Length: 597
Image (cartoon, rainbow, N blue to C red; front, side, top):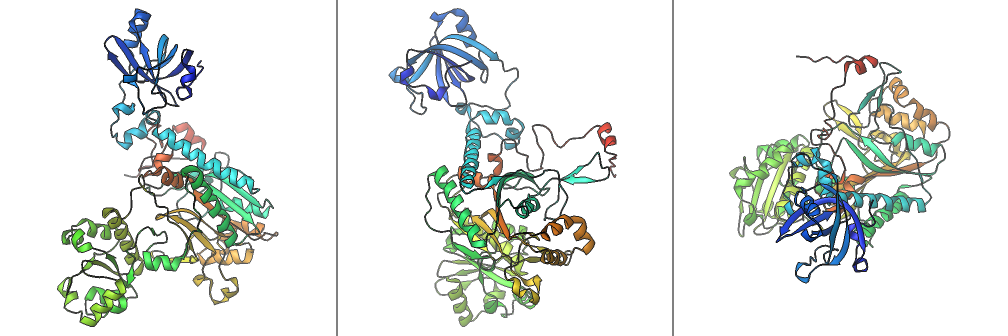
């Protein structure tokens, strides 16, 4: 149908007869000659229609609408010097069209302009609904090509190391992994349900037990959870598992993989080893297990200094086993007003939305501090000196304080820290970012307490191996896991662990998270049985392809890396899914829908 695409054309094609196909990007009528920019998947080329080549051809060109699909044949020529466009690769060339064939008309008005020349900031909901038009704009297609390149680099790297790509089932058993499952009713086993996998976790462990040795998969995963910019109900991960391996070896090979991806996509060669930080240090100093280390403003624990000054909120926090922490905003006296950190202010609201009752503040001035009377009146010179030394505060700095349950203090100050860093431009937006702060977070606790249900939950998942198995008699509940996350600029891009490979230990961990012997047999009997048949030591990791692609292309949402994403209500606006199904389908499944008033 065509003998060239736009980006293939160069000076060696001048004078040749060229056949091209594509879309009308825009049309311009200049003094009797019609100029049309043709767009295909590779780029653009200017077409010229001269009345001297026939009135019928010229008339057809005059009536072309943007986005009409056409095929053209003509002679490639050099553009006149005054009309050269150095912004495109074919900017010195034009096609003098002799034959025009309309392959498809545009029958309705476009919901938004597609041409980059008519670009407007279209609402994301509209872009998702008409994703095929958004793709034609080119930026999304380039994003998908970058995503493809990331996956190809990973495949080539893992193939080189002797990994085998294996597909695991999408219809599987519902197991507790932290988020809600998407459930699929079975027609042949009525009353029973499949679950779509939140990860291939158990199947990849079974492959190791089966002797595969090194496995990987570009895996589709599903989680029915609330959405945010870096989450979708269905997402893609690079899933990796290895046998006869330890934590250090897993970190080494996967660090090499990530460096390879950054070098081949962004031409950034990272020589140094990624730094490491324990989970406890991350929580103590950053308030989160995915710290952004591109800037300072670390959390300082000042409970021993301020806990007994007589300020009721501080006293209650310490007496109930909580914390008093603060961050130091360098130069904050001049950059952040009181209005912003008091009730009704934006920074105050960020803290509240993260669960805090509010924020306390101390402004450091040359010869004094400025704060509310209940704090200032109870601070003597010695305590002020200790506080300023602990926080490295000096004239002009602003201390923001949180007090209460340690997890709430950590969470709220972490959010405030991130918010202020963006507000004061201590970090660039994703689109402008040039700083890549990779960090391995290690030594996660095995469990955390679910306060609502008053029970233990696995912090990663209940298949992580304890760090020091010889000390388990002191209590598995307080053990650290051989678990590790890779964090980049405050986002977790991968996580993994050494797995439990002994059946007795696996049962003990499952009991610790509240499962009875009967529940263990029902949900994980197949795994326990497999572990009893010679399971090797094994471990692995999974990387979020969507997040990695988002960071590499400099987008603010993973939706910019996915061809057909869901919106923030987990709906596909293009196909209008999820949707109702007809009664006969429900009857086949023996399911009845009841709507309670």
